[in-house]
Image (cartoon, rainbow, N blue to C red; front, side, top):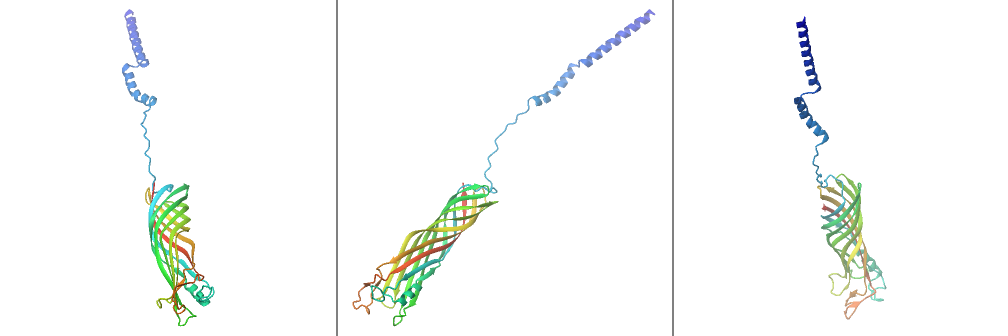
Length: 318
């Protein structure tokens, strides 16, 4: 009996010892487990507390694309094309008394014929080419600006009118010869229009300036006598007028564009009056054959220039 009690007591002690060890293992995990958990937890904790800071760099500034509809800024360029004109050249005189009366020369019938022969049109054609510069402002798709250009505009033509006197026997003729010449054209023009993708469609108009070189010569009995009536008028001046037109410009790269443009130019009438230079030396009418002035037989010449310009060019934008 005593032996049995001792054996039961020893078993109880062993059970208690085992239970105590298991409880401590559950409540206080081993250092190895903790170390393992800490190693696994460290990256997550570090990622949460101290997020990785990435280095930021400023994005490179992109140049304006050719697809952009921005036309604002300065530009320069060149152009070539053609010009055709329809100039009105008018030379006339007036009846003031008749031949050798009141310092006059022509009969009324002759005056009418001369005025008809002196009303001519010159239609010169030529090449044009030059340079232009300008600046554009822009608000949305609306573009407005101003452009200045200087172009070669060489035109030179001579026209003549000839008829036969009806009051002279035999029937002698007379001739009115007129020559018009221009060398250059400058315009200062506002431009305004709208963009459509890569295109700019615009209208334009403003000041035009050119040089006018005009010469008129009157001669009766052309080629028949050395003794004859002659007269001349000359106009040499820089003349201001106006211009209007339209065009289209297309972008082909960031800075370059090409364009086509039509302009109409007109210059106000220029007038000159011959006063006292009408001279005749007619031996049959004046026995002495000496030159004689007929200052009251006045010739008046007027010039009106009208031209059409078609240009193709390019521009570089800054």
